[in-house]
Amino acid sequence: MSAEQLLGSGDFGTATVVADLEAGLGTLSRLEAEKVDLTVVVVEPTPRSLDVGARALSIAREKQQGRTLVVANKVRDVDADLARVREWLGDVEVVVVPEDDAVVEADARGIALFDHDPGSPALASLASIADLLV
Amino acid sequence: MKIAVTGKGGSGKTTTSAALARTLARRGLAVVALDCDTNPNLGISLGVGDQETERLLTLRERLDEGGVEHAPGWDELMERFGTDAPDGVRLGVITRIENPEPG
Image (cartoon, rainbow over all chains, first blue to last red):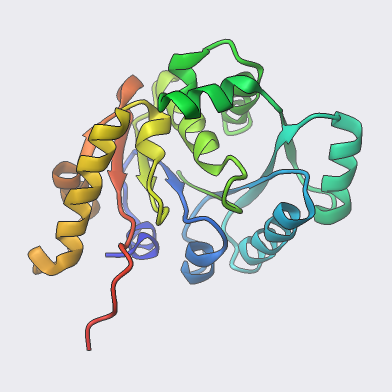
């Protein structure tokens, strides 16, 4: 069973499903229409990342994969980076996540950011996504 | 509610997924985290460690090799091929391992 088959199979009961799709556009491209309630598009403020993000947004909208939300990650200069995100992605709902050494350190140690540095700025921003869902 | 997290490799997709899953679980929701990436490391970002992440991947490979005759439902899949992550998140690895389609 593939990821898109499982996600498309529907009934997860009362569970909230968070699916970390394959890098790039593969799973999103193969997923049948209207199978998720929210598509989170994670981008860095770089042309290559924003290009993939723009295409992901386009596919998600075309296939009506629920609400779309952009996470602008590894942001150093909020004004300039946010302007770049808007330039590529238009008027979208954006959560800004600052560049944060704690993320790199957690990755290097092979542990969760939550367990490495619960007070990290990046984690606070990422956790704020949950506020947008209720 | 089903949430799909997507993006270019290296964008922070997995870190985002893990942080969101654990935050929602801490707020009392029953959360199922699905690792659909061909380089599955959501387990590490959720905090189950690399050994358990590797074990899940091995289970998943066995499933792909045809050990299961009928595709199980998601709950059976999560029961057999999932693991418990911190904050009550249930993690499953559903990556299709690179292998040729039969026939």
